[in-house]
Image (cartoon, rainbow, N blue to C red; front, side, top):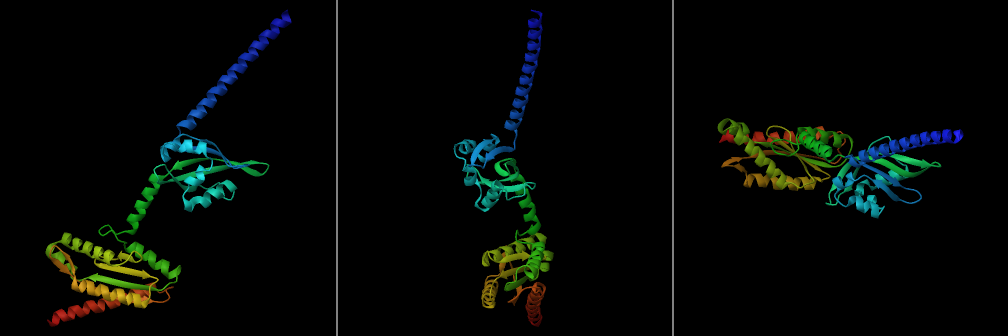
Length: 313
């Protein structure tokens, strides 16, 4: 009887410890689950062997990619491959096959239910069994705002604030690019606004700015999207025409000259002419500075001819 009572006491004590453990484990699992469920990051577990199978994705995926995304993942395990941007598909395939550096962040674009691609930075971890990847688990963070900010900052660093065309900094980058990285034929046209100082001194800088904006609009309307139009100084513009021929450059140059001669830039009754110069190279490596100097020289020849004609009159 005594042994029975001793055993009962020990059994009850052991059972209480077991209950305490189970309660602790339950609370721990629920806390972990709640943390995952409430996370604004997207947490997932995806089986890749023996077949692709979606195991788990946190509900936050619906917040970033639209309601119904999680349901689609649960219904069809191929959904991630349908959502990925075509240009990023190779990244996803490398991720599930182990042909990627898992220590680095992975940038991917996934299409939401609104049809818009959203940017995610992902850190993935492969799960191995017998030396083979059987699953991928990871965490993805939406970086749409970061990408938007980076694009805005890049735009500001490469574009002129007054005219919204490329600035001197971007022109310098193009000089480097075509000097050292891409050897193609290129044409260049330089434009300098005549008597802008007179307009600024007589009518004010606001009027001068309006004329500069009108010139930028004329250039962007006349030249195609394949050209690179830059404002490189207060009243100086450069048009770069990559992969063009001398004949194409001459044709555009002559038509542009007729355009500005017969329809001069105008802003509130003020007419402003431009002096222009051109240059061409069949081969461009280490020639960008020289082609710029030649076009600039030709432009100033025209400008001086106008001055001399004015003095004679």
